[in-house]
Every structure is written in C-alpha cells, then in structure tokens.
Image 1 (cartoon, helix red, strand yellow):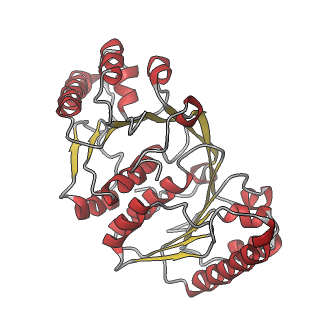
Image 2: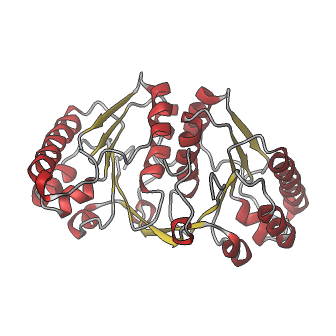
Length: 174
Length: 174
C-alpha cells in the first residue's frame, strides 16, 4: 500500500469544492511534486487563483477546456466538443503519468450531461497510474464514480450570504 | 452592501476545512490583498503548504500558536495559554484592519474546550472591520458562532481511505 494514489471527489451543493482542490494542489506543489489542473467549466477558478497559480508555473500545468457556464441549446454542440476535448486531454495526461496530482475540475457536469461516457471514465480511473492522485470536483458526482473513489467529501451549504442578499466579494467569491 | 466582509465557517468531520481556507487565501493573495493566517493547532497546515506559502511571504502573515494535537492532562495549562495567546493575537490583528482575509484555523477546538470565552468571541466577530473577511475552521463549530456567520459549510466525510487501511500520502495527507 506504499504511496498509493487516491481517487478523490469533492461534491455537494456547498462552497469549497474547487477551492479545496486548489489547497490540495498547494500541498503537492510545496513538495515540488507536479500538478495538472484541467478545468471543464471556464470561470470555476477566479482571477485571484489564476494570478496565484502563476507563482507555481514551473510545476503546475493548467488547462481550461470549458466555455463557461452556458449549457444553452445554441451552444450545446460546442459544449459537448469542449467536454470531449477536455476528456481526451485528461486521458492523455493520466497515461503520461508525469504528475503527482491531477485535478479534473467540474468534471461531474460533463458526466451528468452524458458528454463523457461514464463507463469509459470508470475504466480510466480504475486503471490510472498506481501512485497518481486524481481529484474530481463538481455537484452531483455520479454514483458509478463515488463507488470506486477512495475519498469522497460532500460540501454542504448550511448558510450562504447570497440568500441574505450580499453581493459576490472581490477576492472571495471571484 | 458594497464590499461587505463575510464571517465564514468551515466545519464538519470531513476533509477540506483547512485546505479550502488555504484555497480562499490564494484567491485574495492573487488579487494582491493581504492575508493573515493564525493556526491554533500546530500541524494542521502541512510541510507542503508551508513551503508553498513561502512564495507569498510578501503579503501573507502566518502564525502558529498551538502546540500540536495533544490535549493531554500534563499539557493542559500550556495548551490553554497557547490558545489564549493566539486569541489575543487574533484580536489585535482584527482590530489593526490591515488584512483582507483572516483565517483562524482550528479555532473551534479552543472555543469548545472553553479556552476562549465564546461571548467575547461573538462580540469580536460582530464588531470586526466592515470590509474584512474572517474564516474559522474546525469540527463542531459552536452554535453561537454559526448563528452570526454569513457562510457556513459543512465538510462531510462520505468515504475515507484510512477506513480501508491506506496510509497517509506524501503531498496529500501530510
């Protein structure tokens, strides 16, 4: 069981799924272990996170494949293509086995919308390199992926400022 | 409601409370907004996180006030003193109003063990500088603090690798 890589999921309707993955990346980066982040929805990492990640560009590979949170009928083919391109990229990065941690940010949406085949995804995760950690984030993680995961954390919203009418805050929400 | 600072809590028995706070710090730091982190239990930030945080030493103030996860009878007076010193530091940093975000990491333990007076804590948080964000982390956040918070997230463990006997992983768990 030495140095076994974990399949991890951050799911739930609360804050902190992506942010916690970012913190996890920092742990690896601090050890000088390379990290790859693939963001399936544009905008889930904010400007501040992007600027911060520049301080790690020597060992952090960062890709945005999504087109933003649209899911509008007129963009569906484009969204599907982006999700599939992102998945091809993810598979190739996983098989290269160069990274200590791969973050597939907001992957659950593409799985839930049937843009990525879930059976193939399960196969890929089950056969990932032994010592590689993979973190998947997003709401409503599919049960097929939860089933094979080593660590699943549900971020549950107990109280949210939007509900009391406070606007998004610079450096906190964006 | 412009630029109102939030009182935030990450609680629950799952992973990601501190890690998510660290991610939140990155958002602020990327905006060049100063952050102060006070760690009430030594070891809740790991070596990797410490090394990573060095890349931000120009705008990140970092303090460790706790003595580790002991709570042993022979150390109780020392632990109490550490918690109280940390709380005095926190109050002074809050009143200085120099930081965009202050993280009080694992503060809940000191509150739950009665090392810090909860009535005073509620008063301090209620009267924090208007545009300052404060993030409190730790299990079993007291209801008095939850009551006045703007955002409370419960990190809930659904599946944990320790339960299937996997050891802590370098760069992930420590």
